[in-house]
Length: 327
Ligand SMILES: [Ca+2]
Image 1: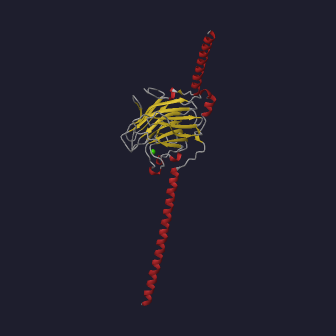
Image 2: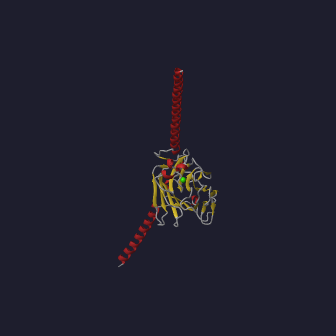
């Protein structure tokens, strides 16, 4: 009887220890620390985040642009990111009076050049870092193989130009079509950067589950850049709203020592094996070849005219000579 009592106690203690160990090991294997210094949420009163252009802190969201023409706005985190592996969860809303036509879209940034308004969805061109574009208007019309709205990724070392006329097709690393405008359900994006791999997932179907938009390996991004979001409207417009911006350290914090973090500051943003296709140059070449053909045509027509004139003058003199012979 006494033996069975102690064995029951022993079993209880053992199972409690095992349970605690299991809970701890589970927590250790999935550490996602919310980094408050890089996150923005209600009530948005956070002096580590700064507004630019048309952007406004409102009660329930940050409005980057209102549904009005020719507006640009942005919100930027002023704390440089010293985390190598991270994940962003962004709750956003894009909506407006336009049913079929709206624009231009918004962008989520991890770049060096914060707090500068510019032509790329409200921020500067030739940026240094990572840009994720939520493009709601197709400038390239029927030339795309996909529909719009479209989410695309661009990695830039400062040398590349984002070409709006081709919706950045030539500099796009990857992308996916995503119908996130004017939805009744809440719309979220998760952007995970871990071990040089970028994974973007969406929750825009009201199902409360993530579906993969894109995955890209071998993207190198330095530490020390800034998170931000910007938006722009042109002839077409939309409300571009940011509801929450949460940044998580994805569980490898204890392995990221100071030397590694500082070492990664010198990394130049790049994607291994990526070949940049300059669409503006291609169009220029096409235009140049057309103008060359036009010059050839003009020369040909001038030669034809000269030959015809020469033949005409010859026959004119011939006929005069013949007339003289008759007299
Ligand atoms: Ca566009």
